[in-house]
Length: 385
Image (cartoon, rainbow, N blue to C red; front, side):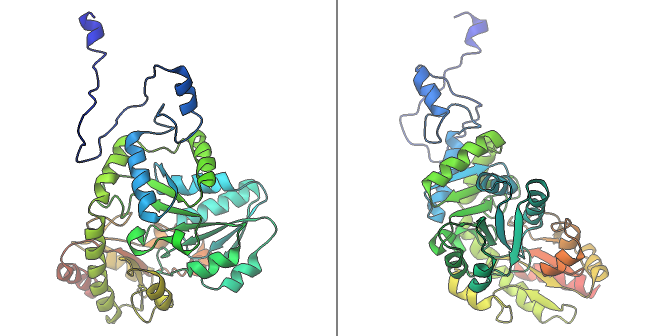
């Protein structure tokens, strides 16, 4: 080969030993000697890797790792948490279908359900998520999905997953967003879920440096059908994003423990502060979901909310912080705060905010892994101001 050709065709070495970390396959496609293997790889998720929108070894490593953590059959990684939710719901629903959904959900999920109702005529019935009889009463002939969050954003409501999943019956797809709990605190498949979704941007990635999502499936047929839809939807993550998330997974257990230790300190101190009306952390025995959380979860999580007097008090609080940052997202190593009514749940009107348990004075706190006393000094100072 002449130099012009040689510089293009750099051979990729094949290691004869096992790498200690997952290799980054930053490639858009893969070459074949066999055209039949090429064609077969484009028809199924477990065929040969062909094109990264269909599958990639680094992405597959993330999918396999999260599927194993959640106790699922297979997983589908996506470019964001909302990508995972869209892939699952768009594959499961058609025009005129019916969804039963928990009232206290992430604002983006509520907005998607509202959009499906407007565009496709998908009907949605909202329930509390703790009463199986309420779920049974909501069932219709065209009910296709029951949608829940393990720990609700931002009120800390914990769904009674075994009871409400059983009430939905075998013909309804039970989808559970497990982002706030992570697989270390809860594995919804063990409690009747058919699909578990995560924003891997949060605790699984854990370092505020990557955006991604994943859906874990209890059933292989459902996984394959959703994969087929996701390929056309185009929500596949970039391999580098998957690689960063796999790296973050390695410290998940250490981080989750530290997050929750700090959250317990801050939640209890906030509960005793005169400026705070109520703290929505399920680890407190005053929280409505405390008994369910103690029964189902391996911990109480570390992102929670608390209510100040009104929106003006909330604004004064978030602008009075120094160490704690006003920023979106959660689950990173640093402590973050936001005002849900104006940000994460901005799509909701006043009635919908009230139904979700959010007031103008509600503040969401994602507790990081810093020293708890340093965090409290900053929070107490902002409350005083």
